[in-house]
Image 1 (cartoon, rainbow, N blue to C red):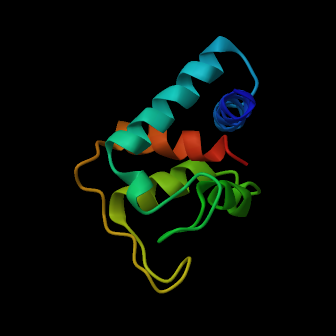
Image 2 (cartoon, rainbow, N blue to C red):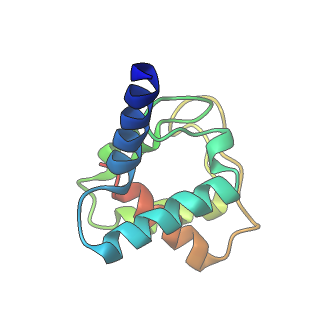
Length: 113
């Protein structure tokens, strides 16, 4: 029974860290970003906290935290793809996304710093 309780607490902590602490609107936006990332298969190559095929999204947010245009830059990278930025594995263009969806994802990623 204790292990179940610890597992539930750990899962809640990860979700809380992903969603951040803030207003209900911030939680809704974070939830929408996470849901979109899962729906659009971003999590097939990325994880929030650890490198996988692509960099950890937390690391992406930290890398670009100092850029004033970080969300716009990431939106462009999400839509058009890139190569050589984080290693040898290219990120393909995500032509299935609308510009608004890419902006939602980019804004969400930047909340993970």
